[in-house]
Length: 90
Image (cartoon, rainbow, N blue to C red):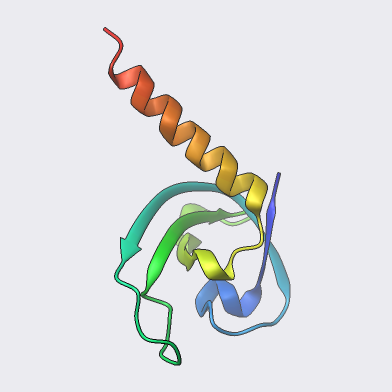
């Protein structure tokens, strides 16, 4: 399961270019939604992604609206849910 992103989306999620793959998602954060027409790089739900073939210094926060990897998103939320259940045990 890998998500596809463009080179520009790696650096600036609002632009398009060459495609890259997301290896995995490991965090999320929520920003207040902004009015339409404004830069949405800091609005809504964002995920912290690890790019395939790059080390962790290239990890980026990517807006959910710019992601094309529903399998990775589902896996991330399943992992979050399972981690929460494991915290309550013992």
